[in-house]
Every structure is written in C-alpha cells, then in structure tokens.
Image (cartoon, helix red, strand yellow):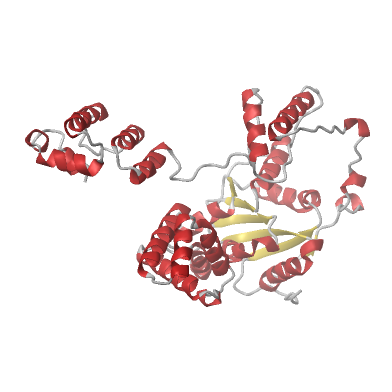
Length: 427
C-alpha cells in the first residue's frame, strides 16, 4: 500500500476517510452520525447534501434504516455514479454520447472500414464488429478507463478502426465519458462547491474507472465523508492500492470499530438461524424454481412477524425476471432491483418502430412508426388521412416501397399539389 500522507492536500476540501469491516459497523459508527449531523440544516443550506453509493441496494439500505427510525430524508439526494456525472457535467458543458450513439457510430465506422479494405481477414473482422459492436466498444472503454492509448492494441487493423471510431465521435462533437470525468476533475477546483455535505459509500478497487469522478465529487463538496471497506481476501493488493490512493490524496483513514467490540466478519456467529427456519426447494427448470421462490415468499409474508423480506440472486438473468413476473401476477408488491432494468432514453415504441422502418422501408413499418410517435411530420394531417392516401397510392402501383411511393406522389398532380404533400414529407 502506498504510504499515507500525514496531512491532506492543501487544496482538498474537508474530507474524512473511514475503513470498516461491515456495513452494519459503518452504519452504527459513521453513517448514522453523518445523517444526524446534516438533518437539522437540510432546509436551511442552499447547497444540498448528497449520498453516492456504488449500488442501488446500498441506497435502499440507508433509506430503509432512516425511515424505520423516523428520520427525515428532506434535502438529501441519493445519487448513482451516472447521476453524479450528470450533475458535475452541467458546469462544464460537455456533451457525452448515449450508449446507443456510440454503438451506431462504431457500426457505421466498421462498415466503412470493411468497404475500404482489401484484406479479407480485416474485412471479416470489421463486418463482425459492425454486426455486434458492443464487445469491441467495451474493450475500448476498458482501455480508455485505464488511461492507456490505442497503441496498446496489437492488431493494426483494430487499432486503425478504433482510431477512426474515436475521430468520428469527436467530429460529432461528443466527449468520451472517461475523458469527460478527467475534464470535470481538472475543473472541479475552479467552481464553488456543488454540495454542502457528501457521503461516498461502498466503492472498492473494482470501481477504479470511477476514481476521477469520485475525486471530482469530493472536490465539489464543502465536507466529504468517505467510507471504504477492508481489503477483500481475493483482491487484497488491489484494494490496498485503492485505499492508499484515497489516503495519499485526502489524508489517513480512521478505522471503524466493530459493533459491540465483536468481529463482524463472521455472520454465522452473529446471526444464528434455527434449522427449522431453513427451507430448501428444488425445481427442474427455471420456471419451477421461480414458482417455488414465489411460494416461499408468500409463506414468509403470511407470518405476522415478517416486516421485510429480501430475495438474493446470483445475478441478472431469466430467474429473477420470472420471479418478478410471478410476483406481479400474484399481486405481491415488491421492489424490482435486478430483474428489469430501466429502459434507456431511446428504448420506447417510437424508437423501435423507427429502427424497424430503417431496416424495412415499407408501408406497414411506416404506419407503426406514425402511430407510435408524437412528431408532427405531415403538417398536422392526421395519421388516418396519411394511411388512406398511401393505401390509395399502393393500389395504383402495387408496390409498398417508401421511395417508389414518394416518387409516385411527386409525379401525381393530385398528390403533389394537394394538402397532404406526401412527397416532401417522405423525403
């Protein structure tokens, strides 16, 4: 671990670091006191207090504890890393592209690269990336997040393709997210603090790409409390380096004492569970497993002493989605934190209809897009009138291709000079 500085940097804000072995100990000794400190001045300070957590479940844990104790959450913002980035970027005016934009630009760049190359192997690689750009896009993200350049890519063809892609992104006026984080960090000291109090909780060495963002957030707060976890056994060297980086930047960390003077690493000793309260269920397939889980949930909820119930999955997949579906069908209210993620900004009926129209520029996809969108494409003319006119054109030419129908509308005196103006709208 790098040696910790005895004093934090002169330009750094008032930041306190804490290291604990368990979330319960951190809650009892640090986090609860932090919320009690900011509660009286929440409505008086112009600058808000914010809590940044590595996962949504950690934010749910804090909210549930505070609500159970009857404490106010007024004027406290719970932020995820993307939400934190959005707040900090507002002061720098940096347009960060959506994931959909990057996939589209990489796919277009790969297609152009394949058409301009004469090497068969390079063409196959470029076409593969054009069909499925996500894997190569993630590789570029990981490379840039580590602070490396494209020279680290061994393949000359992939290196050139990545360079063209980054050039295309910058020509569109976009800034890559990791470059934006570094710009925000460099500019953080020039602005007034964005937060009055900031709590950073739950981040470890697995979140190295977020270091510039978290550093910038700490510099953007008048007072910051950072709660780190003890190094994990399977990643001790990385976690020690992560903690050392925080200590080198903001001063030495304080060790959080264990709860009631006991070690908190052993959950079995602290929370004994009677054998009669352990249930094993087995399903032949995912559907049977999901139904069994829902049945056990209903049994637990029928117990009057059950105040809160949690379902722990190994990760996102078919099983949590089926459990969420069956819980909804059974009318059991639940917080879906893993099965169905929130859709992106483009993921709606209009966007999917637009994609279908681009792949098949014909009448039926066009009609589906017109019904799904709120855009005024035809100067206020109703969708029913548009459909009636286009169906009449189709009956005349017996072709439903949009370009051919547009040419027919342009050559027809009734449609060219009529109130609809389909030829111009279909361009």
